Image 1 (cartoon, one colour):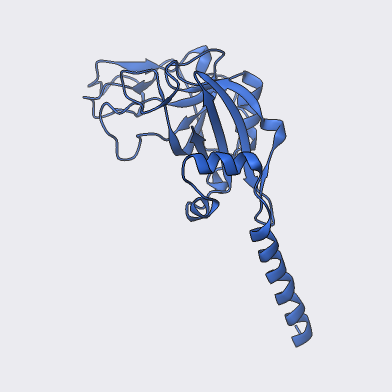
Image 2 (image 1 turned 30 degrees about the horizontal axis):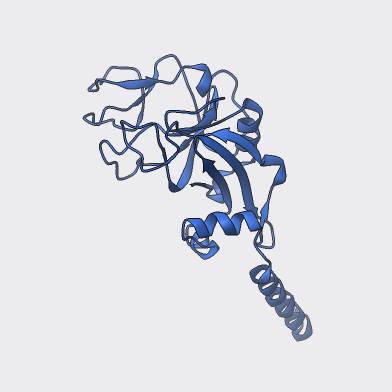
Length: 224
């Protein structure tokens, strides 16, 4: 490349960077982030390029989706704006004994399904009749998915082979440094009324989110 072309390439690269940095954020994203004291710079540190936002009013939820475009600008996908539901007690501090959806920013985990696998860019697992999610704080498998009961050390676990879990994804709350009793089994899934702590919405919306979400873009979900 001759020096002149190098200069032109450099100017274009700088202009693109400045344009992306200067581009205004969607109003809904600005509002959602500021409510939790977050910034897009923080999302950048997480290498997050997709964000599901759940805004709550009581037990009702308002879902929206944001993604970085090829120029690095955050844009809203209006086709994924939808209504939904959160916990019967709304959004707040979650626990094992309260139907409250956990407030905060969490990684989007694996997709799950019964029957036919949906189109998705997430890692996924099929739910079978012997798939459980352990909710017993005293179990070594607390807040983990298990298949079968061969190593059963729990007194309670959610049976996942149910119609509400025919499609969804795991909300990675309390799954890494697990705190017994802080709450377990939080999912984004098919549901049409206030939940026991998950985020619920209609089947077509869940499928549309699964289709759009891409693990390579390190998606997160912000619940408030």
